[in-house]
Image 1: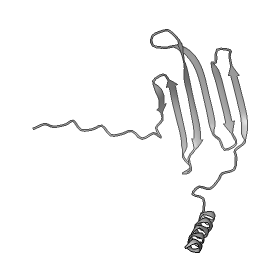
Image 2 (image 1 turned 120 degrees about the vertical axis):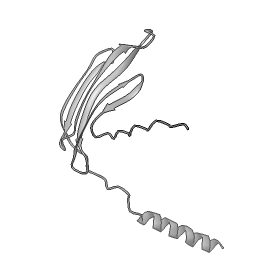
Image 3 (image 1 turned 180 degrees about the vertical axis):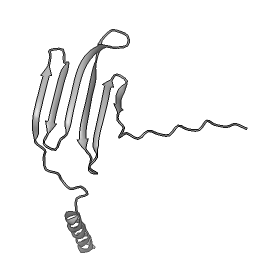
Image 4 (image 1 turned 60 degrees about the vertical axis):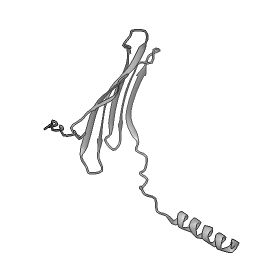
Length: 119
């Protein structure tokens, strides 16, 4: 019984070791330009471009929260990259106390639901 268990575990280990990875690892992409500024309060501006054409720009600004008792860091930004299909994807966004709000023609929009009809 023990030899059957040993053989089974050995086969499982060999199969697991031979399993092909699901995704191919891509080599790191070099950053070719970068600019970053930050103040004492935590507000910031960051821009960078990579060798594959990816561009990222973002800015963090402190704004008073809804009840005025504290500040919230609101981030505005955009990023642009080439999809695996070769399409340029550009997204502009705002991230605030209410969440992440992206805008892009590349983001699908759900169809409007038909109004319910009650008979």
